[in-house]
Amino acid sequence: MTLLSRTLLVTLAVLAPTTATAHASTAHGCTSSVPYVSDEGGYDTYRVPATVTTRRGTVLAFAEGRHNSPSDTGHIDVVLRRSDDGGCTWGPLRVVAAGDGDTRGNPAPVLDPRTGAIVLVTCYNSGAVTEAQIMRGEVTPERGRRVFVQRSRDDGLTFSAPREITAQVKRPDWRWYATGPGHAVALTRGPHAGRLVVAANHSGPPPAGSPDTGAEARYYGAHDIYSDDGGDSWHIGFTDDTYDGVVNANESTAAQLPDGRLYFNSRDQNGTTPGNRVDTYSGDGGESVEHPYAGQPTLDDAPVVEGSVLQLAGPEAPLLFSAPSVPTVRRSMAVWSSADAGATFTRSLTLADQPAAYSDLTQVDARTVGLLYETGTTGPYDTIEFRRLPVDGL
Image 1 (cartoon, rainbow, N blue to C red):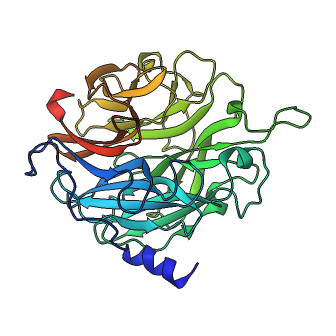
Image 2 (cartoon, rainbow, N blue to C red):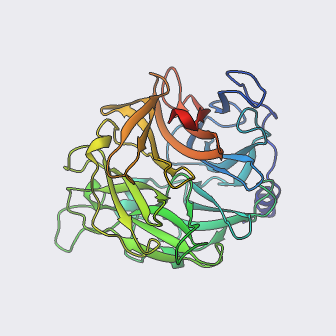
Image 3 (spheres, helix red, strand yellow):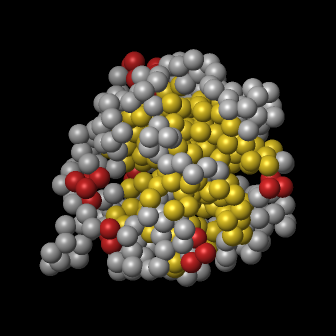
């Protein structure tokens, strides 16, 4: 790593103006704002939002800043904007993890409840290789998917340089690897209180003698990683390695339920089970799951896309899920609510009938949920919008 890139990572160089357009008032009662607009701030496209609210109430909005195109491959940085007024206005755009010509992405931030630090887990690969090449096993480990952790102790103003944890969290036979994307989970009750859990996914190789290359959707599987010491050391929890073509769990999200269990919800990558969402539960802090991933029929409006879950605070509070709500196309961002710990969901709100894709949820305060999501008029990746939603409407 060059001295320049290390300096950028630690000091979070300013790259954009200090405010963003608010669709309503710029006072604390606004309804929405737009922290990221494609073709601004030195980036062609912003994608893959992730958000978390700090102990001080600051909203952090992470994204992938894609320098040259909307492609998943190439020169990509992890960037951040901060809001100290609940997501109505935003501070300068800052680089958290610089690609330096390579790919940094899949941000998974979480608030460590023991220290108040923000722990951020991200992924890396060479900017010259594609996901398909990695899944086919055509790249060296150094150029393939690697995993890194960073920490901020000053409310997201600065982050430590990325520290590699690949050997702790990636099995040698796994090829593709992705954290989240979207916020991770800090367990707040039960025997594993304080544990940080990151929902993740991977791909495996075909069995010996198979005509498959490994790039087929059936070789996606989900897993999680966890840390019991605030992100210093990490462990692999449960793994889903069925590769049966029925359930192809891909990008994953998690929440801790009021009863202490973890709920995992994943994108089903072209599996044959009805619908495009699959889910499961863990009763031991993510070390194992109660049953293999199975289809979630009450979320059958969602297309094949990343989604987010968030358990609101309180023993009777609902579990929320966000994603587009047209099964065949990425549009019409919506929020669903579950009153039975994820067994069934009901659509509570459709934000707009516009193109929309990835999203992430955060609880801004006791009365407000924040939804950071990709949307636009010409396509789903024109902007990343932050919508403030009243809890009593969900």
